[in-house]
Amino acid sequence: MVIPKEICILGLLIKKNLIDLFRNIVFGYIKLNKFDMNLIIFVSNNFDALITVLVLFLSIILFIKNTIAPELTGLLCVGIFIATGVLSPEKALAGFGSPSLITLMGLFAVSSALFKSGALDRVRELISSENVKTPRKLISLIAFLIAPISGIVPNTPVVASLLPLVEGWCERRNISPSKVLLPLSFATLLGGTLTLLGSSVNLLVSDISQQLGYGALELFSLTAIGIPVWLIGTTYMILVSDFLLPDRGRDKNFIKNGDMNIYFTEITIPCESELVGQSVRNSRLQRRFDVDVLELQRNGKVILPPLADRKIEPEDRLIIRVTRSDLLRLQQEHTILLGENKRSFEGINLFSDDEGSKTFEALLPSGSTLSGASLRELRFRQRHNATVLALRRGQQTVQERLGQAVLRAGDVLLIQAPLDSIRGLQASNDLLILDQFEEDIPVLIKKPIAIAIAIGMVLLPSISNIPLVGSVLLAVIAMVGFGCLRPAEIQKSIRLDVILLLGSLSCFSVAMQVTGLADLIAVNLDFIIDGMPLYFALVVIFTSTVILTQFISNAASVALILPVAIQFSSMLEISPNALIMLVLFGASQSFLTPMGYQTNLMVYGPGRYRFFDIAKYGAGLTFIMSLTVPVLIILNFK
Image 1 (cartoon, rainbow, N blue to C red):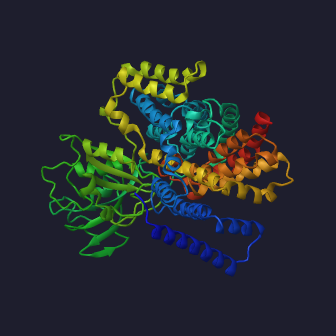
Image 2: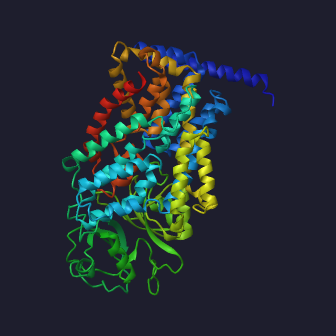
Image 3: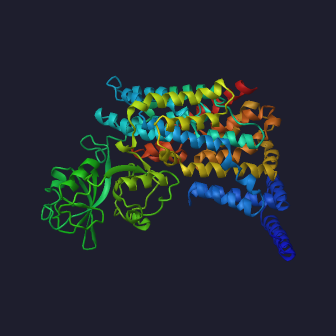
């Protein structure tokens, strides 16, 4: 299609006026330093650079505020780069066809086959062993056993698989889960830097490195630095665990009768309930089930504690704190109705498995589209054919009605749904299912085959010229061929949100390189590290990456920092590959906030941690890594 001459002229005039307006606003109202002035002059004379700067600022704001899902932010930026002509469609979308992304997709399938075939059963037996009696012994076992597994298998399913097991260990020994769950998350993060397969961020770095002309990373490129990092981090976690990990589980408000799964929910008292006419104190709610009534709603009025002597009337709504087991028993004994379900329960058991319904726990991960809205606003029951029975939110007391409570990242929902609805929730990536279902697990006879295929996948690129992506794809085919994985399960195992995010983020690095922004920023920021010894310069770059990673995803921080950091290689007289490794390890240090990484959020609620508990335990580890990793980089590359 030929574009009319008039439209071209109009486009050029708009472009020129935008640049002039930008230049006049900035120079007219802001006093800037030399770097700011150079950046403004550069972008005001370079429309592509101006668009890139604006897109970068927009993306950082969206990543921090989490207004929309991270993968949608990435796709939005790709679309802007293409629409404005900053990048051609081929360059902007190159990340979606990269070998690293195909490798990650295959790795999701391989790890799914490993879990479903029972490859971690031996690990489960060791954790459940009677010889492991103290938190320090369990942390040592996790650090030395689970971390290496995370070097091959993505850490999110590892934590999801072991979380209920560790909670059960704590319950049997009357130990607070807060004494052991955070090390579980940290151990998988440390193990994720042992090999290229350990983390999706590792594969993103490899992809960006190849696009910038420095070649892709090898399977064991990280190992020489990753092993010392793992051992140092493990030593720290074990030594400081007794006095830096809080004991949050012994609070009488949250642990009763040894049950750690405390939920908040809303119940309705039907007319035929035996509770009608009884006081709260003398009812079965507290005499037998040990339920705490936090609020009573009657005829549109809210009645707050003390409620012990209040008589229960038909159609009363109670907001209660209750364990999972007691909640299910209450429903099965036809005592209450859950949530806003006003149907009579005569002859009805919502928890029966006659029609394949299951009750399960699901975690709201960071970036979920469900975050920030209530169940009623989401029309959750109608949309997903699933009923949310209760809500667990760390240590916080939830006193809103269940349908009106605004969901947050880290919330754990107790849900009842038929199996086909559960499959839909698993595929949506808005919820992380924490329970395993028997129907999902193939016969255990496939376990040795699955383990052998995984070992072969790792060894094949090391002993032959077959690239890693080829080895992973062959492993996927072998898993299907030997019956460890059904073809339909491949698609279900792939995390589409991760694929979209990583595929879109590589365009940031390409845009910064193509427009010259990376060179400009590096040249004008050299005064920060100019004259510094190499070691201290690397510490500054590493620390900057760590700080940025706490506020936006580690994948986004890599995409933004890596192209700039590489430009310092000539001034520091060190290989660009050294700076690539430095940024990679810096982006993997998510030890300061719950939002720093998905696994931190997964243990945040069950461990009943407070926000600064993460920083208290992880600050020392981050400080040690900030001093240690630059030394390891120099020893390996100088």
